[in-house]
Image 1 (tube, protein in one colour):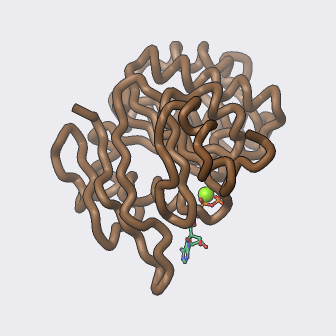
Image 2 (cartoon, helix red, strand yellow):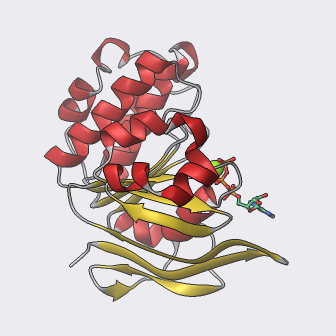
Length: 233
Ligand SMILES: Nc1ncnc2c1ncn2[C@@H]1O[C@H](COP(=O)(O)OP(=O)(O)OP(=O)(O)O)[C@@H](O)[C@H]1O
Ligand SMILES: [Mg+2]
């Protein structure tokens, strides 16, 4: 059974249907990419899955249980974690203070493994405002992964990163999610990186699923080539 599932998830903003009946099923240790043009509904999808936004219809399931009406806080406490499209580090705190606070709130995990894998050891006692933007994004990822979540929803972790940094970030996501058996949903504009990193990819367009499948299936899909990838495919 999938650890986390959305069935027919629909979100409206007034007359606009930002998300129209989307299904997705996430499996432990599998990185599931979600791509689509600006305004496709990707962040809205994460907001509805994480409990930040109530859907107009459809349901969200954790281990087969309907959690659609559970709060964002409840979901975080029960292993559904997320990161935001914009960095959410506290600028005046050190990396260690920030990670310790999250680890404490979410189950007193030792920081060493995540810190080592993400290469944060060298900046652990620096305040976040003073570290490079790319490193702040690694702190965002560390925050999302602390407390041993079972599901992470990552909204554009590579936003604002240069190509090398994006490649490293995606590699870290893949390694950490596989090692920890975390089900990951990865929203990202860096399409080539998504094809290289993800096991499964769903393409959203205007709030609907255009196609969902393996990277090879998605790359070869005529609708995707026409509507999204164009000559980049
Ligand atoms: N708070 C809101 N109020 C009204 N409309 C909104 C709101 N948030 C998003 N929308 C609209 O919903 C649609 C989906 O937006 P969303 O931010 O989910 O797209 P996205 O795929 O994440 O885009 P991007 O790639 O630019 O981050 C867009 O048409 C957007 O303008
Ligand atoms: Mg977005």
